[in-house]
Length: 234
Ligand SMILES: *[C@@H]1O[C@H](CO)[C@@H](O)[C@H](O)[C@H]1NC(C)=O
Image (cartoon, rainbow, N blue to C red; front, side, top):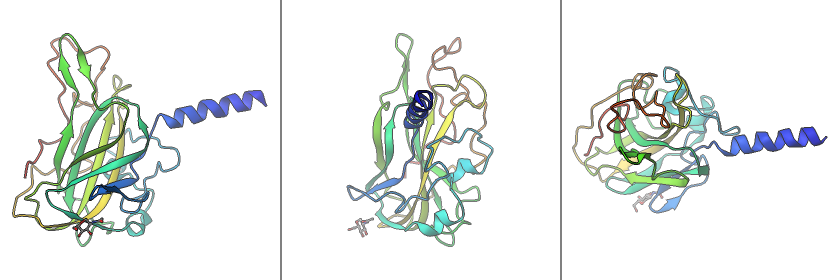
């Protein structure tokens, strides 16, 4: 009995280190869990995606009902949005947010399957020779950013991601925490978002920002090289 209890405690603490992004922040308010975010396959165990070539790297949905079960949040371009995690995000990593136009609608399973994704925000670790990599984002519970003001009106998926780097020194070690919210952008502009990428496709397992021993940086290291495209500023 004592052994079983100890195992359960170890299992629980293991799970507590991981996380999901079930709540969308809009208009200064966090939604209910999975109200606008497609329910992810890790909604129970909180485990990460580790294969950048799998379809799970896109939105990590539990199943085809994840899209239809979630609502679509109306979001004003230029406003602040974000994701709230179900746990303290204790792993050091690189945060980013992507969007894709969503046709025929944000709650459609055919949305976001093509090379239609663009990056709108990132939060990278800083680096100096004396400090090494510094993760100001470690141990936060939510992250927020702005929908670019010139984003054209319409339906989008909004993908929040953290690439946790604590065991990224071996191939396939980086841990991807992902949530996709379904949104309808209003009050937008006439920008042309880009560069455009696909998921899977945007990342390679050997990208220097994905395969990286953060505790023993390569010789000549000069700072974190983010994977994926540059940020579209709108
Ligand atoms: C956010 O505010 C806008 C403008 O008032 C409103 O149209 C929209 O429905 C709000 N979104 C949510 C998810 O409450």
